[in-house]
Length: 581
Image 1: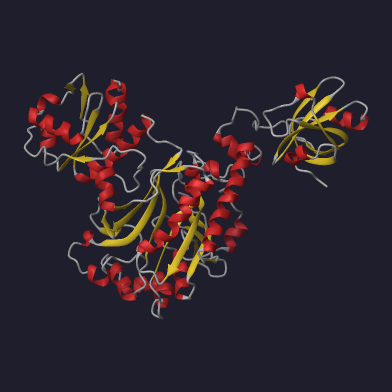
Image 2: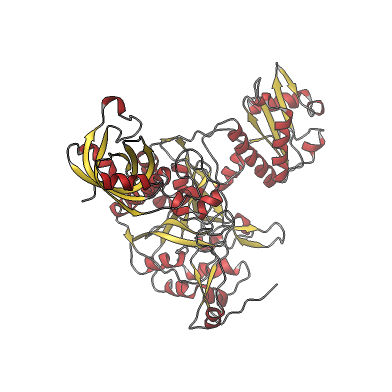
């Protein structure tokens, strides 16, 4: 029977069989040492010439050959033990050796510190996965899933799988469409989320649903977003009319994942709730990283009568105080200025506090009382720099929010061992397109507006608040959810405000809205981005490091060479033609 490498330490004096890959081979003339690796670790084989057949085979071995070895486990001599590996105190004196398969020279290194480029690693992912780090990530992820499933079962959620071939859904991204062979000209869509199905489960009498769902969105990949398919812990609860019930139900799981699974510290035991408006005003982001302060401070009123044109002509003036930033070089400030410009700023004004004085190109344009007011409101001291944003309020928040994160990264304020959680609540139900001026859904059209039908009668549609919420972890959105709209009349109304008639709603969401006419209970839920959350918990900065087979940064599977062309017979069956542009 096969013995895993890690178990050999407890089998001294026993005969065992180990199987794995050749990690290294060392030929000492009359003695050959082979390090064999399996998923549990590495163990040393010792093969002497008197085992003539085994010795002859051992001379042929090269890295990554697949072998089976049988022999007795013995303790190494005291001076020959290796304290750097778990099995460093034992070795196997080989009696029988079998080559199960041979290996060509590897196109990428899987041992040592020399790691190939990401493109090569993804092309040869099956080799890259042999690295101990990747093996550990796969095992960690399995434990991560188990922790989630155990918790959900304890909280009496029922795991239900929902269809992959579904209908198009307005989740905010492009769908992946699948042409139907038996219904020419019609298409399925791979689900961006199981939104409609999980709401139908609530109508169907399921009290609490969850699944680890595969979702599909045709969005551009980023360091924190996979291309194509991704996974989420999807859940829904019936007879729930307040999002706080969902939040308080799921919070203990996330805390458990932080402290017990990842072994990290929570910034605060109590998870704060911030309204969308408060988050944007204080942090310039609806996914603020709370591991550091550097809040946006309002200066509009304090500078109401200033003669400095940049501030005088602005709708809003805000600033952030960066502690210890007076040592920034001119070139470093220029770099931050370019970042500000990329977010829509015209430039980056600042005041430097050094040697008891204020140093800045703009100081001469500000009155002494204005400089005093800024220093007091910002809490600025020697060594600090105050950076300003002056423009439309939305632009100021966006610019300073981006700079806040950039300064925190520059000054190492983002402690990877600390996890800061918060809930962002009360999102705007509608938003206005900056180019067209038209209204659109701000978040999720299936959420309930706070105040129900009456709230939709308000003249200011941008002031309507949705009962929606996100969870944020260290500046990453890891969850989105809401109290659902289960009332057909309200559903027709929220789409009607955007100019869509009842027929449009019936055509797009007929299955769900029809179900709501037969006693749909109030319900609410959310979905956690499993990949992104795992990335943060294990301290990775690239989400492709935590998935077994991701697409690359261009959305290509370099290993399987997809997407690719198909033959004309397949296209004919699907009634499709390729149009050249």
